[in-house]
Every structure is written in C-alpha cells, then in structure tokens.
Length: 316
Image 1 (cartoon, one colour):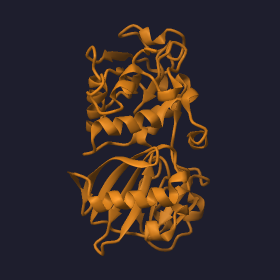
Image 2: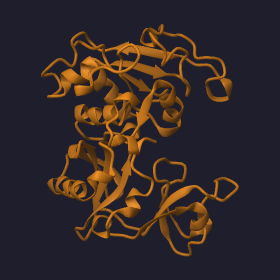
Image 3: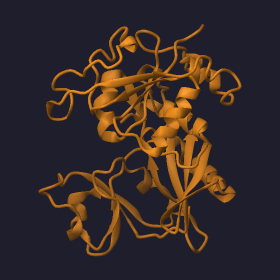
C-alpha cells in the first residue's frame, strides 16, 4: 500500500538543530508545516487538513493574547527519501507508513512534531500527536551506579528547605532553570512558582565531557558529543559513551519510552553517569546523524493511534 508523506510540524522560531532536522525531513520527502504563532491553524486535525492553503490565517484568539498567525507548507523533492537515500528506514519515513501499523490519520497522513514544550502542549492534542517522555522521577529512581550522585524528586516547596548547594531542575521542561543553587532560598519563590511543582534535586557533579544519546527501540540509535568542560563543543560519539548508554538501557531500558534522548557524561575521575533524560521531540541533535536523530523524533511525537502498548504509559 502506498501512503501519503508524513508531515512534520515545526514552531515559529527554529534553532540551528531544528533547521538541520527540517532539511533532513525535506530530503526524505516529508512535508513541513511551519507555524508563525504558538497556536493550531484552523483546519488542522480535520479531514483534508493536509491540503490547508498556504498562507491561511490562524483562527482569531488562537495565538498568544489572541494574536492571529499563519503557517507555511513546504514539500520535499519528488522521490526524496526513497529506498537507499537515508538508510534502511528511508522509504518508510518518506511514504508516511508506520511499519506494520500502516498509515494513520483521517486522510492517511501521519503527523509528527519537533518543538519546545510550550508549543507542543498547545499543538499536539489538536493534531492527535502523542508526546513521549520519561517519567518525572526517572532520574531519581536510577541506581547510584548509573548516576554517581544522590538525586531526589520532590516539590519545590520541599526544596525551599535545602540548606546546602544543590543542582535543581524541572524533570521534563525548563520551567525551573537548571542551575546550582546555593540553598533553597535562592529558588524561584511561591509568588512565581506553584509550591507543588515537581523538581529534581541532586548533588553537584562536574562533567569533563558530555554526550547526547538518541535511543530508539532499546538501542543507541544516534549519538554525539555536545560539551566539554561545561562549554559547547561538538564532536563524534565516544566508544565508552556508547558502551555506557548500552549499560543504561540494559539496566533501565524498560522504564523509558521507545524513543527518548538521554545525556551522559564522564567526570575528571573517569566515572560515567547519566546527566538527564529529555523528550526527543524537544531535543537538539547537535552532532548526531540527523537522519537517525529524525527517526527518533518521529517516533517520540507521532500519531496517538500508532502507539505501542508499552509507549502508552509514557505519554506527556
């Protein structure tokens, strides 16, 4: 059965990584829908929406503070993503088929998304996209051998009682800046944040080098270095980083969705540790193979009708 192309929805402002994935998606024959406001275009999600006219306006009141916007549609070159053009998954990605699941959506189109949480939370439900992410306390539940530090999940109200330096962050978004705080009094106060907001609190650990691993179906599907001594430094994946990623999957792979990003690092003493897990649909690909990174994104934010039983427990 021949299926229409998949569709990748992108936010108004593209990072360098998003532009790389956009170019990769076009080369593989996906159709791109770029928004100019954080809202859902009128007609998206309804029968025949894939033919929504270029430049059509967003519904009044759908954008921030009621501001209207628009979208741009872009198609890849005819034949892009045919067998052999992007690895073994090329033809499946470009045709819109989802393996044994076939096509999805009311008109056969499979709709996917790559964006930050604030945009994704607005757009994904209207388009029937299931956003996969790790459980909020996943990092805190890992064995010490994989983290090399004490990590606890708690509410920010509880974290206010900290009387020591600690690294504090939001589990699955950026609502609480990921920083080392001198103590709990330096965290955003209850006037700015709901005290029930969940955070991860960990011992301070400094990494000499950091890698991003794109995990798909229980394997390290793509990887690359993104930092050295706390500064952005892109490079190829390290063999030891890949081996550690396999160790993480062997120990905790069943506690993750089928598509996720996990950052790992090595400290100055040579100890490997998990830094954090991030939603693939909201993560940059850095120096990873963009084709393989895109495959992880497409699985991590795709049609809810195509979810596996395992992944249903990891929907945002």
